[in-house]
Length: 155
Image (cartoon, rainbow, N blue to C red; front, side, top):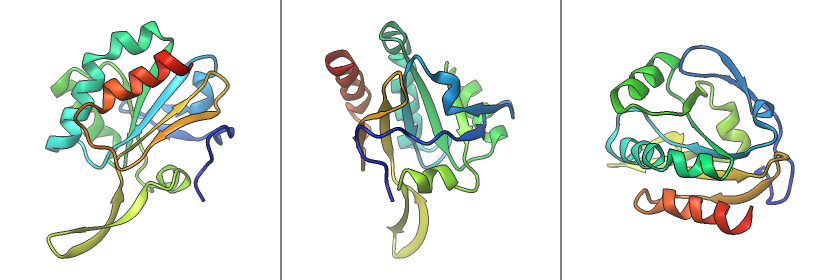
């Protein structure tokens, strides 16, 4: 069951690209942009990560941190960060428990085959850790600006 807007998001802990344990509660006092993406180094995910990278300073000015989450392992995240100079953490949700908590682990269909994977989605949390906005089935183009605008206008 997905969390509802206005509700407190349950704390979770996942390893980042360096294998260090990172908890959502570590970011209390800041707005948090959690974006779930399917796979490191793929075209859409690279475009999305680079868009977040290019707006990183703007998010920081609004007291917001960006955190990417995918089922890829920490080592893959580190390569992705190094290749594209990403200035934010990527968390490894290899068993997809956090993705399931956010209801973004979905049955997908591609070229006639079915498999489970991440449905590209972004969640914006306020400084107390309450969900303020969710973007589901995200289309990459223009999405980062949309998330930034929501924070500017509402938080």
